[in-house]
Image (cartoon, rainbow, N blue to C red; front, side, top):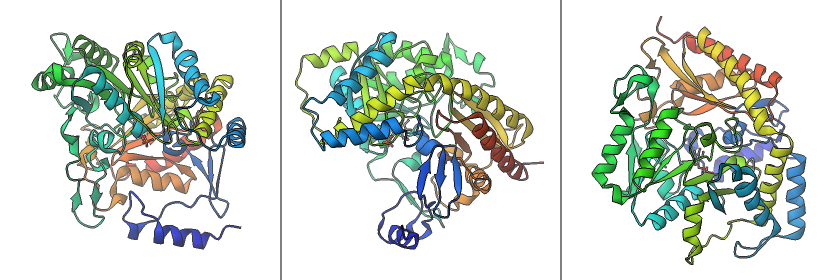
Length: 471
Ligand SMILES: Cc1ncc(COP(=O)(O)O)c(C=O)c1O
């Protein structure tokens, strides 16, 4: 029997928590997880429309994954990466050959433990391969919390900063920002185009989009021979940007022409989230380096990875890579990765995400038509974003600092948190990482009935937010 009073007391007293000042520390207590639901200590059931951190792709505690973890624990506690286990080899084969093989570009994969590490690794190997120092990241991006990945986050308050809940005081990690080797490029934010174009189809200059032109000028400023890679999320998890097809294709052309690698961060968009195994597959391009996390193991254990193209793999054939990580390719995590991917294949979860996602998208677009506070709905598969606005016509955001907030003051004022609180009254968990950006991403196993339940809760929450819109 768990003593929840003690759990909460110890958590409040001893845990160095995030996202709230410790004196306002009030996370949701969770007694267990069941399917798409979080069960609270008093037996309440919350439909998790965020599937953890948009990460429990194949659903919680899938019996085949649980069995695989138990079996691996019977055979191995720990062995390090520089030894061979059946799980690591099979996980690598499944990803490089079975999932990515048909696209023809993937050479090898290395496993690490988190999306942040996967991105650090991508930076290291891109710099080694090109022998160039700079990495270019994009506005509004989130790539993780470690020094390299964290410093290329375009959402500035998420770069490990601290912020006061009561005043405007905030502090970024000294020396962290852009770490001396990272540069931020404009995002193709067509909803509020920073270059003033109203129509994303008419923003090209000399056959190239305005924001790609700006990126090219940044590259010229650094010297193309100094740029190792550009890293992007094709759909940004926090910032809600869905990159237009032309933008991704123009980026690919630009990087290829200049010997610059394209790192495709699929930590959130990967493993079926967008209705294809990986988001790049919607765009008719292939990356040089792809980072993965979350859905690779449906977050049941820590695991992540970085895939390199055949050209990069060939380069690494020739060298010793003096590089170690105690937990890389941990056998128990690898067993879970194998079981998770096989389950996704057997149950056709990617196809299912595409189908249910179409339904979810349709229902969200109905809400877009019905509610004043919904400026735009965007996404694909089971990865959707809602731009919350005070004025639909002018696109004025509720929270003026929008994606450039410093995270200070009363977070209860953030439109996204108002929606979260209201939806929770209806037993549904939604939320987001930026003040006016609502993120939705249920497990790929979500049913239509659960989608309806989630949409009803959103309808209720948006009705409340509508009352704060300009008349
Ligand atoms: C696109 C993206 N990249 C990287 C990360 C970092 O992954 P992790 O939290 O596993 O370090 C995240 C986490 O949310 C993410 O969304």
